[in-house]
Image (cartoon, rainbow, N blue to C red; front, side, top):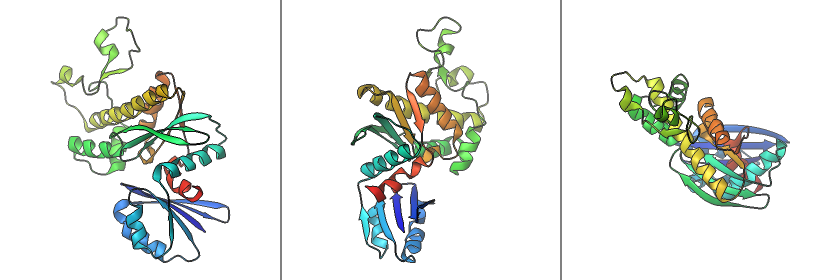
Length: 265
């Protein structure tokens, strides 16, 4: 049995491969001692590990561990997932949207880091809490899905007020920039959180698009734990990517790319 682990800042993602069957598990990073206890109870296993907390988790377990660089492991996992889903891309940007976002250019042979942004799941949870006092991530996402950004985000069409716009009227001119025109109104938690997902999704997409233009590719593969059960964020990213003329791709179980790739690196 082979176990690949991506020990990240927020989640510990685990892929178990046993007799041609694959199982996916995840824990909060605060449960790292529990994960170590579970691993120490296993026999006849090969353990592969990557991620920012890999060294610490390695120190807690008795098994020999093979460790790899996170970026390379993630790339290896994405390549395998793309092949399994019959998606053939000669080159692409992949954006790993976890606590923050890391952006890379990939070919069939290698990857290189192209940049990143602090916008990601950590921003959703932190800014979301500051605005609504909701701390549970799933509740934040569910609440946001019921919101409307129109009173909070200023779009190009709001500025031109019916006149012909030089660019798409649906593009956001200023995140949170419409608030001053609605100061006599009440902003619900749903609307506030929808705007938070908006600024995160659009920031991630904009940086990804700039990287794609720099490396002359039209393909952007989005992965990461921030998309788990988060249809609104996924829709924002897809719509904004298409609006800017590029092709977005999402991979089932893509957040486990690092864990899977650690086995095959």
